Image (cartoon, rainbow, N blue to C red; front, side):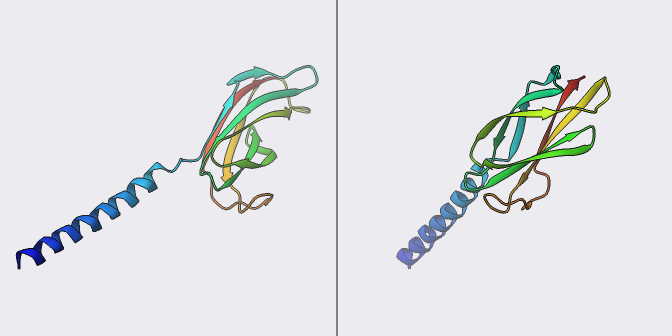
Length: 132
C-alpha cells in the first residue's frame, strides 16, 4: 500500500515537472520586435533617408516590415529571418512637403519565405522622426 502510494506521488511529480517545463520553454520564445535607428534625421539632397532596421522573432519564422510615411504605407520589405536580422534601408521622401514627418515601421509575420501574405496581425511597430 505504501509502495503504491509512493509510486503515485512520484508519477504526479514527474507529470507536474513535465508540464512546468513545457510552460517554461513556451515563455522563452522571443517576442517579435522591430527597432529602427537613427531615431531622428534629415533627408539628404536627393530626398533619401537611411535607416538600420533590426528585427527579432521566432527562429523558424520570417517577417515583413511595412514602412509608413505620416499614416500612408509606402513600401514593404520581406524575408527578415526570425531569430535576429538587420538591414540597411534607403527610403525615398520625394514629393513630400518640407517639415517634420513620421516614418513608422510595422512588423508582421509572413506566411512563408518569399510570401507576400501576412500570417499575423500587427506584432510590433517603431517610429522615427524625419525632417525634410
